[in-house]
Length: 216
Image (cartoon, rainbow, N blue to C red; front, top):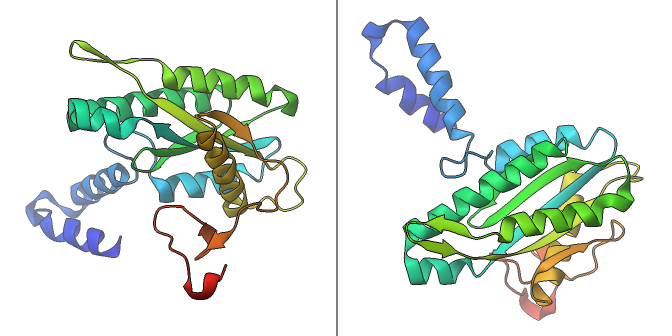
């Protein structure tokens, strides 16, 4: 981020005056905190907001990954894939806002959200609603593009010290379970990870590789 600030500062014309330069700089930096395709916060911004929200009551963390997204890209092109991601971002963002939370794009076709629930027993209904919204066809030119979604959720309700990394890890495990069973949604029970860990992440996650000697 420091390199970005330096580059933006150097590019601004001095003749415009420091006051105008400061306004433009803040606007440009604000844009970098949002994903330009979906309009959702990027990972760093989402995580900062999510940590703040987890200090409040009744919070649930949701992690999701699209199913069949690569096939859309391969069949219809990257413009079609972008249309799907933009639609998913809008739908997830609206769902999260409707439930008193926020959403973000973590990377590629992976998204996360937080929501606030007064009654935890209603979480399955909310996840069914979200899954249905995300799987609705996306209009693109003369096509109706279809993707699925695997959703994992973890509630920090009742946890003495809610921790975002733990919540995301457990939601990730639940999402992976949903994906193994063909999609839909799953809810993680309890804060203790159930799957093996490689390099601090769930084994099998992109960017992980087995350590020598089978270390975990």
